Length: 169
Image 1 (cartoon, rainbow, N blue to C red):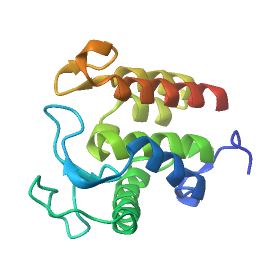
Image 2: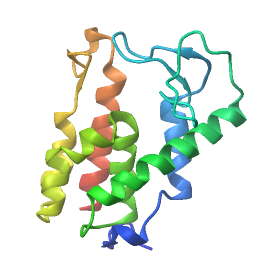
Image 3: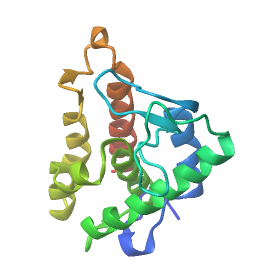
Image 4: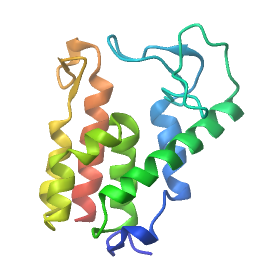
């Protein structure tokens, strides 16, 4: 399927191509870390919760890459349910679906559900939805578009999502 053909979200799912870049962007940490000061602990490929629903704690034991991959797939599949529900009636290309699901993985389902991205998508304003990605540049009240704030990677990821989104629209 072309990355520009829009179909019902009900027919889409995270593509196989979705997981490899996500794992690269999130990186891998066997031990829990706090990726950005003021953020919550993550482990594996950025998981903040274990598959059983308990939050990752700094005192948790190390995990393997295999476990991290399982946690990632579990986390994405759980988020995807709420993600699809929020997008009811919206048509997206596979590329757009993956872009917004990636956003949801990083920022959470409630951030997406309450976003101008979603409002724009529901209104059929696809380029405006892409532009809304750039509004998300803060972590722990720090503007990540400012390199010296120590979270520039968050902003770089948003800029990359925006670029890909504009390309398919």
